Length: 212
Ligand SMILES: [Fe+2]
Image 1 (tube, rainbow, N blue to C red):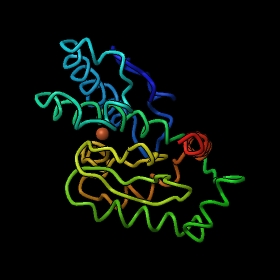
Image 2 (image 1 turned 90 degrees about the vertical axis):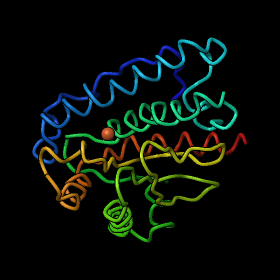
Image 3 (image 1 turned 30 degrees about the vertical axis):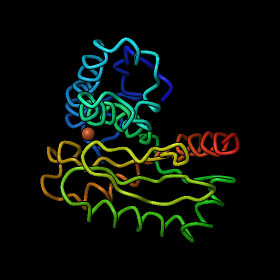
Image 4 (image 1 turned 180 degrees about the vertical axis):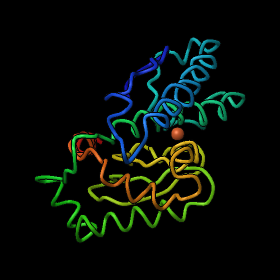
């Protein structure tokens, strides 16, 4: 997330109907065109009044939230997080059929979760149990993979922790299709994971880790 102000309203990386039947066209239209766009607009609206921050990347803004002017910390946290999280979420999905991690990344999954099936169980458990709105994540930190959760639009990013994948469990991500059945949404979502993209995030995280 090396973009800077003005942050672009990125197009969905596939057609709105590409994830059906697991995720409906209607959900993606609302999620992308309304919810995600609102975060982009709000973030740009906040930064429009802060020229000194306009060259700061989204990742840096979120890593160093505490260093921002106090009156915009909450706005950047919620809206900057909303942009970061949704961009990762949309890229983590694909509609080309089930795929699996490969190569060194597959080895890391097996090392830290024993198996892909067990990773799916750990992620599912975290996402189902998350109270209220938020995300479950696969993150890379200091050579190790783990699953964490965040509330609202918080992002588990730091100088050493790299988000690789996230599942949005805000009701707006599934309610139109699944109503209150969050567990069904999560179960179907697992078949949408774009492991090729997540692998690229893993490789980037490893490379950045080596430079710290
Ligand atoms: Fe969302």
